[in-house]
Length: 489
Ligand code: PLP
Image (cartoon, rainbow, N blue to C red; front, side, top):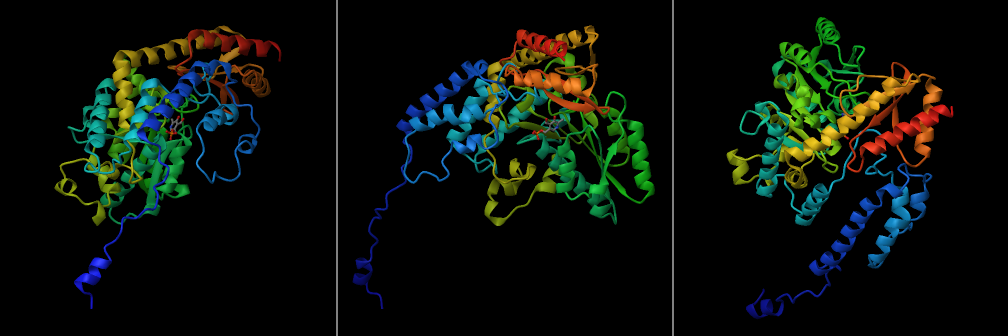
């Protein structure tokens, strides 16, 4: 039997296990200054590096010990390693000569926003798990609706709302899951194997991947034909849908693109959405790069037809001066999304969620946990203001258009696709091999990085403008290097 005196003998003593060697706030201040100084210095030195990394596979790994440190290390050696091992292994996306893929700008305000997000270390899965994380996100997503002239129904005070996803890929996946659930709940007797997704061969590869992850069969993703400008053909969509209906299948979703990856083609969203709407299908629009152009009233053509779609996304982490990762996604009917993605275990229940009066963004995305991403978008929007964002978009378009003009005027080159914004697809008339050699010459020079695509079976060069450090003279220098490479063919 336990007696009172026996209990007193076992009062637990304070445990003396030492805590881990955490960085103190003073040390954070000290190192923070040095690391931020290093980052600022990196941006200052950006033009001194070869744009495309010149390391061979395995070279970076060879500079990093095979075993992790057993004892705490000083951070001076980390700063040295950054310069010695990491920087040579970087392709410099922030370099002024970076014209590859699409831009992914790292800007001061977004860097600081990410720092705040890491520093605060909150997890915004539920409103209750950090109300500011949810409410700031809702507010900046509403701001973007207004800044970009998007349909009112995307606003949180309407039927829809916006959410920050990690990527356009995740946005496509969430949209297709919502589309799948809506089709299954509204079509009696339909099974997942019957559902069909329609997109174009010029849509981003993430759409096919998302469809497969969402459970659509590989033979249930249709690549609808496109017209000579690489835009999806509404007539071909209607024909494909009719053929599937006749075969007893269930048309489920159309995924259109405004600004395709290859050539910045614009699918005719209004006409596609009208067909989808009449068939009870979900329309998702991927505006990954081009959506940002809508901050300029003169480029609002990128929004055409969005009033009739179910979901839409674009990437501030491509052209709107916000560091990876930050994709803005909106839905017209938020309940269609949260109904498809919401799961509530007991351990996440709380009074506010139960009342249904707050947004829990975990129900709008695939993962549970989420960072405070809206901070960086908030800082970007406040630093630049609408005018600053417009200046960035307008300069990117102006310089790309000037480049397109030089291509048009040169008898040895041809524009390979319409160039309405900041991407120019072009080729030398000498054929695929000539274009490959021009690209290699440019990229080997260390001054530029361009990438290619294939349009109509022909090797095509792409020049995409939008990096923060790029100025008109860098674009001009790229054109000079291209014509010089062509002269040396
Ligand atoms: N959609 C389009 C049209 C794109 O151009 C890209 C990337 O370039 C993506 C989707 C994929 O974007 P993310 O990396 O955000 O998934």
